[in-house]
Amino acid sequence: MRAKCDEVNPEAVLIGEVFGTGDVLRNYLGKDPVIVNDDLPRDDVKNLKDKFSRYFKKPGLDMVFLFEFLTFKYSAEFFKNKILKYENLFPDPLQPTYVFENHDRCRLINRLNGDIYKARNLATLQLTLRGVITLYQGQEIGMENTYIPLKMAQDPIAHDYFYWIPEFINKKIKERLNRDEVRTPMQWDDTKNAGFTFSDAPWLKVNQNFKEVNVKVQQDNPNSYLSLYKELLSLRRQNSAFSGTLNIIESQNKDILLYLRESSDQKLLVCLNFSDNVNEVRYAGRKMLFSNSNDNSYESDVLYLKPNTAAVLEL
View 1 (cartoon, rainbow, N blue to C red):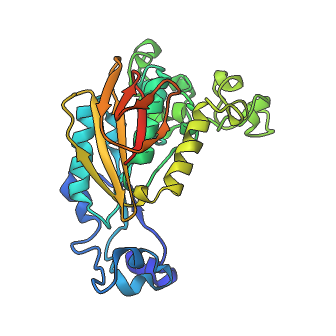
View 2 (cartoon, one colour; view 1 turned 60 degrees about the vertical axis):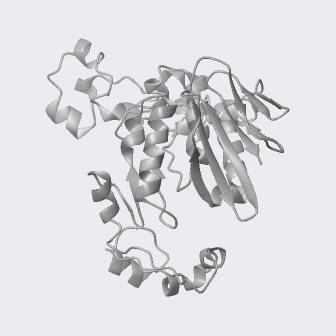
């Protein structure tokens, strides 16, 4: 596959949906996946897109999806350990590829029992980490699972193997057996079929909350979930530190996750509060560059984080 991709288009990227231990995932990239020309500064190497193959050798996949975030525990300790693990397995210039949602697993907002503040925190986490961001359609507006009985499943696995399970039991299973429930049409607006199709009957039914949860209603609301994603993506594009290194900063508070993003000309500190309490982060910086809550503040080198919120300090 690698050889054929390089033959057709040397800049093509191969991302693997593969499974196994961390070492197994790492080996999919090849034993010696990246060779950098040490005669050139790293920044120059990254900009040599037109001469990519001259400086890099790629015998395997370029990236692999990292699915452990799909079964997360909402805690600073959980995410700190996973980030350290993957930073070790996929050091620069390799790229970790974190995933919070996909077409097989329960929607993020459902795993958080509808807590939009925790969801906003995890969005901030994902979009400030080093690596490649992978978002599933509807994740950016907080789409939810759509209940579809097993006997109505289009999903071949649910249809062929789980059809006999009584619905009252199916409803109690946290991870949905019918994957149709996370594959329903994208909710664009509040018109028929959420603006997804003019057809009378789309392949899968639209979630009943489409009039409240859709792109149009969130588009111009600066406090919406969609606007948060837009702001984070813009922040990521406009600040060189997010293309640089990542280093975990140890915190004495077990509910606080801190990591430093750094490039040759910028240092940023990402601070996330995973508790239901107000917490303080004492760190000397120039200003609060970003916050996912209007209630957070930064005064006299002390950052005040409201429950389940995050901020980025420019150092």
